[in-house]
Image (cartoon, rainbow, N blue to C red; front, top):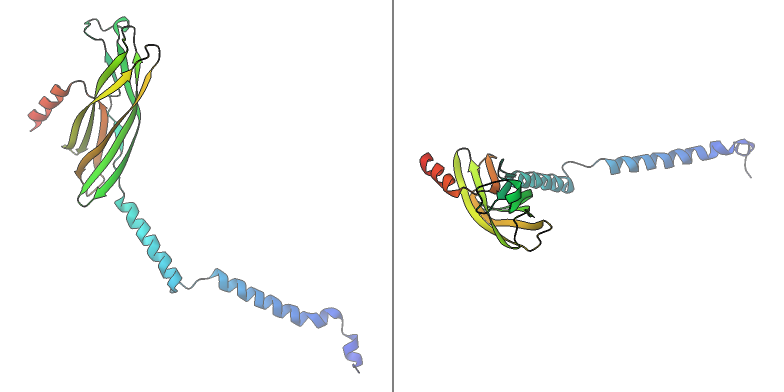
Length: 202
């Protein structure tokens, strides 16, 4: 038979020790999950992975591709000496450049591309157009790579612009030790003048 004292205890006094024990266990469980031992295998593996990511980012330098100032547009007046809008054959332009890099040993190879268009003028005749596009890699005063491409475009619509894509996937040069490489692309309709300037520089 239960004593009078036990009968008179309120319900909250009877369950209070049990509730306190459950709360303490739950709190201890939460604390254990939120703190991870920095010396645990998992924590050390995570730290190593972060180091590898950082090293990869440092080695993934890819020089910026820039359309050289003054070389984004070229105009053609055919054989006419009167370079007025009425005698324009076409105007070509390039924009929206992109590139990717592939390092290999001591060499880096870039794949460069630009979008271009041919806008017909009053003297335009449908057919194949060839425009000179040069890619050059400069490091300080040194020219590491320079190539003149003859880009051919089939332009058959005399009433609308013709779009084209220029691409040089083999821009190769020694891998730079620092981020001091400049890569340029643009029209070069004076290749002989460029060649002469290089000869004088040497």
